[in-house]
Length: 67
Image (cartoon, rainbow, N blue to C red; front, side, top):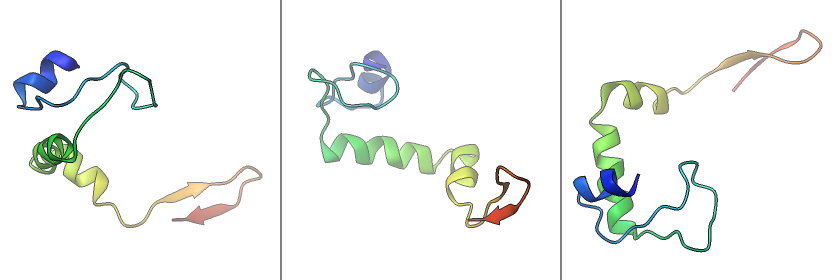
């Protein structure tokens, strides 16, 4: 992840794990996170997932819900 972050120009970030959970030696700046957000927004597949406004799901017990 750190190598890919450098390729994307994220020079003020260091990742300790791939899941985003907090770690003592992990850090990033708002500017670096904006860079990756801009790239994600330009990626059609990611943009389609994060722009979903409604989601139907089945609850335990069989009832349906909508978010």
